[in-house]
Image (cartoon, rainbow, N blue to C red; front, top):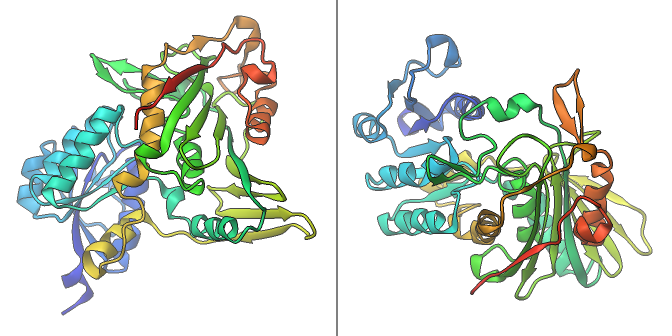
Amino acid sequence: MTANDTAVDIVLVGARGHGRHHLATIRDLAGRGLVRLAGICELTPLTDEEIPDGLGRPRQSADLGALLDATGARIAVICTPIPTHTDLALTAAARGVHVLVEKPPAPSYAEFRRLADGVAAAGVACQIGFQSLASRAVPAIRALIAEGAVGRVTGIGGAGAWARPETYYRRAPWAGRRTLHGADVVDGVLTNPLAHAVATALALAGTPHAEDVTAVETELLRANDIESDDTSCVRVTTALGPRIVVGATLCAERPDEPYVVVHGEHGRITFWYKQDRVLLQRAGHGPEETRYGRTDLLENLVQHLTEGAALLVPPEETGAFMKVVEAIRRAPDPAPLPPGAWRLLPDEGRRVVPGIDALVTAAADTLALYSELGAPWAPAARTKEVSR
């Protein structure tokens, strides 16, 4: 039997935009004999030039169910607009097809439950695309916390200072929207581009499940002419773990790598999650920096099916994150920043909020919200108590 005989057939649902990243991953795994791209589900078929070399000529269709039936694929990778995730995942699950669903898994907690319960009832595996949670830094940091490397954990902060041009919000009809044609979208800075900061902080706190969250405070703002938020912060209160505060913006003056920081009584652990880089600072020791590898989530799903490996990010491990999404969904519409609080960089075609970089950092460092840090444009936080 050749390696190709054991390759797992895959259908990619949504192959443009971020889907190109999945095409590259599938090509890498196919080159190692682990997978075969059996089909591509797109409203408009990809041209030959859009399909990377080494992937052959997969079958294409806009009908996912028909495509799965025709190819006999075992895995569907779903990289489509947020409101479509649940229905597509359940279409696959109904055929016994396992799924990798891009983050955020759903635009509301009700849709998330429909997805999670549906795949569980169908008996198929489901992986959620929070790649940062597949970093080997995550268990390493948990081990440091457990052994008391920084003493008792007093809180966890997250900071994301990114930049996006105004064209970012014109790339797709759902971009920057809270709803579209009556359906929830909730495409905000904390729920989509910097969702990893929220999910990773919850994971490091040991509170990834929905029942772990007791309250969520939100301050949602926007500098861009959009429905959703581009400059926001959130504080999550959990039943047993430390409080978590994440500050985020897509209007940074000087964009930088996002990170999560674990505050302890005797030190801190900073995790730049896109770089898999960890800095341990503690009393009586010099700073210790370590870089870790990470496991690709699609490869982990394949190994789960072929070797029995444990899934790294099953749906229930993202339940707490979805409680945060739900609080943001139910919050009042993001407040527009006053004209004097932002300015346009014409050469870059993007809006910046002066001073926001420092505020994002301060939120992660002090576990305070923007309004508590004295930002004159920040409204008082809205708190949503979460029933357990």
